Each structure stands twice: as structure tokens, then as C-alpha cells.
Length: 248
Image (tube, rainbow, N blue to C red):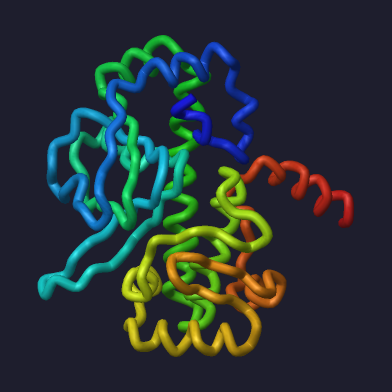
């Protein structure tokens, strides 16, 4: 099933088999895209939305001098630009990090789903609200954490999101990103990222080498990042809320 990672780890079982088949049947095209390629541009009119099936994509903005700021990262199962359905245009660029496979959903098909499937529509809406929650956390990371905290938070978040879609285990996952990409996501220079990663490796916290992330001490890295995955709204969020309530 092409869409099997959509909301995986985030109460996917709230969708019926019929709804899942409707979503699967809404795919109009599947295609592969090479690494380091812009897929959609700022201001571009969009008539379809994209689900990432394999690989990593990012949203980004360039300043006047061409320096890039990553504003989000996407992992398999994510709708990359579902907000483009009602908004019609993008206010940022979207590109691939490594080779990617994507599924396309024509907006006219999504309009039929919205008109006929209110429950499924609610979960499509939920997926766009997740984007907003992640954006708010990225603002916190950039505004309140130092360089080490930002980098730690970046890797902790990806670990949590990839665990949800069964692409990370034991703090290990593939990531076809460069240190420059990490710098652009964390708002620091590539030289500073290099120093931070070296220090983390020497302290036994994290190793990032040859496209693989290996978290060596998740508890300490999480503390450094001030990372709380509640904003990712995982399937265990309700259970965690109940546990916290019972402890009061």
C-alpha cells in the first residue's frame, strides 16, 4: 500500500479500511525524484498535493544573498504540501535531500473527498495541523536554545518521527543530509555545526557520519535539547496524558 505510512504512529487506526482505500485510490501518479532537486517553487500555482513515500524532503526559503533557511523536514508518510490545496500557491520552496519517491493527489480528487468524506477530511486536516505544531517547535528551538540544544533537538525530533513510521530503531536512522543542511535547519554556520557534532561525539551523545545518525545516549541528548515529543501527537499521547493526570 503506497499510503501505508500516512499517520502511522499517530492513530492511523482511527481511519477505517474503507477510508484508507479511498486515500489509496486517490493517488494519481507515483514518481521518483533525484537528490538535491527543487520540486516546487515559491509562488508557483499548485493543482495537486504530494505525499512523500520514500526519502527526505525539506521546505526552505532563500534570502537576498541566496543563503537558505530550512523551515521544515519531511519524512515518509508526510503530506509535503497539503496546505496548497486550499491556498493554491506556496510561499516557500520544496526540494529533496536524497532520492525520493512521491505520490500525487490531484486537488479535484481531494475536493471530492472533502465533499463526501467528512471523517477522512478531519484526518487530512489533522495532518496539516501537525505541520503547524512542528513549525511552532522549530521557532522555539531557534529562539530559545543555544547551538548545541538546536542540533540536539533536530536529531531528537527526526528520531521520534522516524520511529513512528518504522524507519528508526534504537536511536539509529539513515539521513541523507550534510552538515550544511543541519546548519540551515538550526540557524547556525556549518563550521559551528561541525564543532557541535564533534563535541557531541566526544561526550558520547551522538554520532552523525556517512548519512547515518546514531544516538548514543538518548536521555542525555533529550535533556540537552529540552525535547518533549508531545507536540508530535503520537499514538501514545493520550496514554501519556492519562499517566500525567493520574500522577497529580
